[in-house]
Image (cartoon, rainbow, N blue to C red; front, top):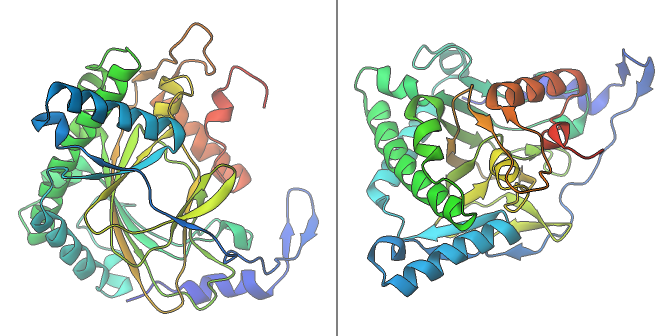
Amino acid sequence: MDPPFNDMYNTLFYKQITNTESNVLEVPFSFSVTAVVEEVELPVIDVSLLMDGAKNEREKCKEEIARASREWGFFQVINHGISMDVLEKMRQEQIRVFREPFDKKSTSDTFSAGSYRWGTPSATCLQQLSWSEAFHVPMTDISDKDFTSLSSAMERFTSESEALAHTLAEVLAEKLERKSNFFKENCVRNTCYVRMNRYPPCPKPSEVYGLMPHTDSDFLTILYQDQVGGLQLIKDNRWVAVKPNPRALIINIGDLFQAWSNGMYKSVEHRVMTNPTMERFSTAYFLCPSYDAVIECSGDCPSYRNFSFREFRQQVQDDVKKLGYKVGLPRFSNHLY
């Protein structure tokens, strides 16, 4: 069932690695990723008030969403309109597909080529490893597939996540006094993604991430996770652990919203820690624009130059290939970094 993590990672645990570009000998070191981290509860927002609340309640809810996006870059939503039946069915189908033998799921034609991913094949040091496997699936793959229990569960989850994402994005645009139909025009169904994640138990949790620190390359992400825990984020220049809430979905701001809002909303670095005994599952929906959509920074003194999503993605891919990690928004800054 599990990918061959040990076969790929053992060389990085125990062998020296030569940096071929600089011809410098690098020795992987045992770094601790399990330092004591405070567990926090993210801001919790009842988004049913956007539809059902009185005018003052709706405005208060909108301000809570904007404030959390400014101060945290992360928040939780309850009464979000996605039923527990839909979420539980998604979880069951996700577990089932990950239970398939590695050889079967890694060569499956259920989704388009390259959708199944595991580990970090390009890693050259321990910090770049991710002890996880995932299906990263374009929304078009879901719509185009024959009806199965998996495609049905994904269709319901993504359709309802899509509606929630657009509602939140329009609120955030409104609070910036910007054109709120930008997302309906540019973030259409065939430009968005869903990602099913599995984090197997890891024998070396003090040395390997489940998912290495990163920011999301989208406008916003909706995350449904189990109760195992492991998600951590940067708050006030330190790592904090997110306390799971069985009633809530987690929302986080992506790089594109940070640029579009001229840094008003924060795309915050986050990571997933490994667990020595328990596996963890999560499903994420990514609100992305078309490749040709131009991200225009707002304000009289823009912090970022205008760029297309295609350009941003290509720069991220180039940096990961060359450096082993994503640089992201600083590449598009109007200021030196």
